[in-house]
Amino acid sequence: MSENPQVVTILEHIEARERELAYQARQFRARIEELTALLGEIDAESENLRITRKILLTLPVPSHATEPEHPDNPDHPAYQQILTALTDAGRPMRARDLCQALDLPILAKNTEGIRAKLKRLVSRGILINPKPACSPAPTPEDHLPPATSAPSFALVPAGCSGFVTGM
Image (cartoon, rainbow, N blue to C red; front, top):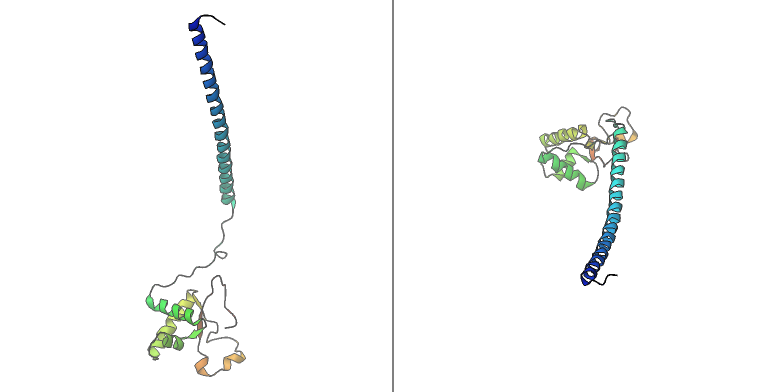
């Protein structure tokens, strides 16, 4: 080594700077490895999303027959009251029974009004009529007295397709 004190000071400064740069290089390499791993994760997720999009675009569009039906509930309060009364009863009810449940006088105009609303709810698929008044083939149960042979209506269970039996 040189005996010159200025050269020794410069060499010490160079060595200190080399150590400092080596330390920074190790830190940057570690950070690069960390960022490379993160970039790999992001690339993998992006690839998964691309594959998912590709698969979804190749799926056939379901026909209307396979889509579940979501009946449109009418907004009028009378329909809501009828549906609430049927839900609370938990059983099929006749128009007369609904008039009683709704505290309406048992008059022809009230029962016919309720019956019309029930038929509208049946036509929308919200209610079912488990025992229609005009059945093509009468069963022994159909020979009941007139007061109990009136049509009764029941709520359609969620996800049910068709009529509910055993009511």
